[in-house]
Image 1 (cartoon, rainbow, N blue to C red):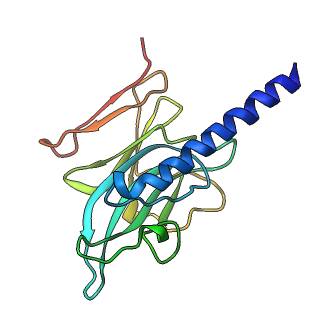
Image 2 (tube, helix red, strand yellow):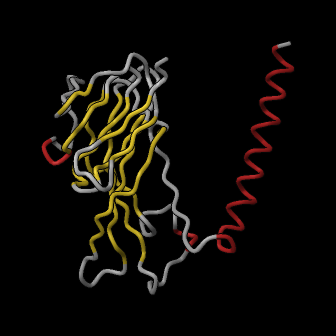
Length: 190
């Protein structure tokens, strides 16, 4: 029985690898730009931050995004990453999209987080403020400019604000774009 399952897993893995190779070969026909970056841990959430910087004399713009880790019993983090995206008029060789010469994705800030980050969303009126949903019932709020770039080795999570009210974990989280500081959260409460 175990050998049959191993065989099926091997076949499935080969099919996935073949499909990936086909997709990768066809990306120049499907997309204007493809950048890949292997994270150390999966992320359940990602959101572009609105800030964009265009360094003078460079053929790329700097964009930022918010991620959250989902680890296997390791310390989880709220992550702010910097992404180098080539300008529209830049000569960009898609074959280098995974190398240091192509688009780059770099983790700039890692903040210790209680459990995995189910959802992370920035406040539209102040993008430095990020709210997160946790596996507990709490919603954590961080001003990432007030946290060091490298996480505290103790693993202690120090949000700037902890919101309570739910009884169970959830994934729904949205800032009001019209009213500053108004945050809506949803969970599996009954």
